[in-house]
Length: 503
Image 1 (cartoon, rainbow, N blue to C red):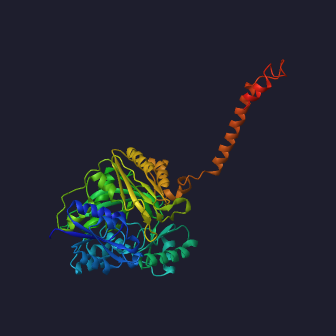
Image 2 (spheres, rainbow, N blue to C red):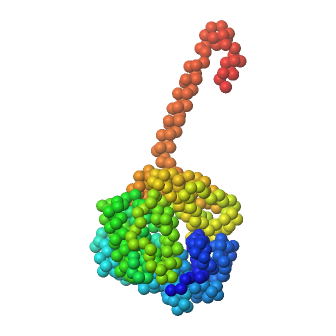
Image 3 (tube, rainbow, N blue to C red):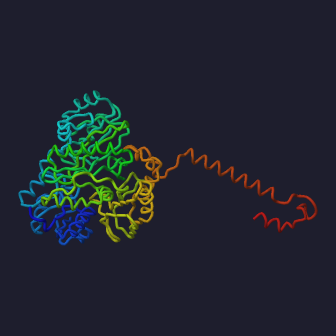
């Protein structure tokens, strides 16, 4: 295949900029697309060319396939990189690119078809001999059937949208009495998010870890894994902090999970970068959860510990190059990534769009900030509120935590509210430091992470303060002269001097 000359990046924000940086290092020209809300965005300024694709709502701009294809043709781009989100896992868009003679930098449509719909992916993995969480292999048609199945496998259960991920259309149901309302809510949210209200059921695993394996494949069937990422620090099923290596994996478990992930990718003839996600139970048994057929938000931590550029690898795979690696590289040191959001944790994580009046980005050794904002930039309210991904590397996990804390202490954003303080609290929490935190960690420790004190502890602190004040006053009183002797009953001390002492 010929070398790619120009890439249109069908995305926005930090991921668009991240892709463009690698393209420029490879000598590849870039084109951006933008909505009305993103006319002044940094990704537009970073690209060699930029093309308007519609109004602010993504369904009228970034998600309109024909407008993206038309922009690529107008730019003379011979390839499209989708980033993540938007059209990155849309098989019909891959086929539209093929029909237009444009290379899609990602897996083939057939792999997306096999893995994009969650119940189909589960069925394919069962056929391939990959362990999956107990549950249905097909969407359930009616509420009555769903209720019967949930009672059969036992509560708690998870309701999940079959047509997408990212926490949309997902509900944990603790008891039968909550099932009907949760079922209706999951279907409604799934329809709004994906245009598909199909829902399936999985058994809920108690205190699971979310561990994913990065896989990579070329067009000739060569497939490897690039180790794991621990993604258990989640809020509403959205990842907030990621790290690698996982603090709970042994080398033996890493090798076993990597082998299963490669098997899953080969089963669907995968090409390019993808992620096989697993749930790990308290007994360290692991189960297939889903496959994300795209580059992940958290890919920088893998790049830190492997020294690889995953975007460059994607481009080379799309050009038809064979994989240079034959096996997973040993993890080098430790990396942590935190997602900086324009949102207010104290107000139920309400988005905080608005103008950034001041911005100081952290720096120093082994600190990376993937961002799409700048001083004076107005964060729009139409898209995901993530404004940057801050990642660090260090020789050990303890040093990586310390470096991430230091970097966050340097991060200053004014004009909008961010979750920076919340992120610092996560990294300082004993459970995170110990490394054995599960997917319910952030929910369970929500009040503590917000800095809200236990009322009983507050009462004890007030009592202790009162006792201390009383003891201090008693000690001072004993140090004053006694009321005896001449001079007005003050031991010969002038009343004026005594008054001054008491001040």
